[in-house]
Length: 140
Image (cartoon, rainbow, N blue to C red; front, side, top):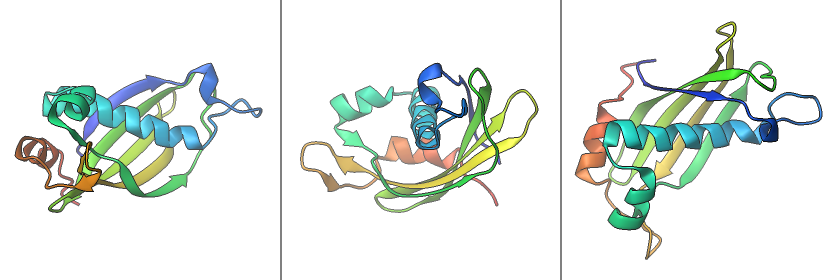
């Protein structure tokens, strides 16, 4: 999966009583990866896209597969790639591997919609965002 990559150490607050990542946290890790991608690939911190450009990308559909446990203290090797771009939507695929042994721990597919943050209406994906997302296009 040619993609943007981001390493994230699993913090104590992300685990449950079983001492592994509590499954909703994987979706949070995907969002952290998207924010890091904005900084590195789009060239605009996501907070600035929200505040200054007035465009956000809320998730409207999410499909997840949880494949292996991830313990506290593990580093996740997170990656994301663009699967599809529409007029106002973008579909990202995320994967998380345990850094210690390379095991694929989860896969997530999110559909996210470009939204005007004041009107809460969908808007076309801004061209500079579209170009950055295209650079992460998954050829599969």
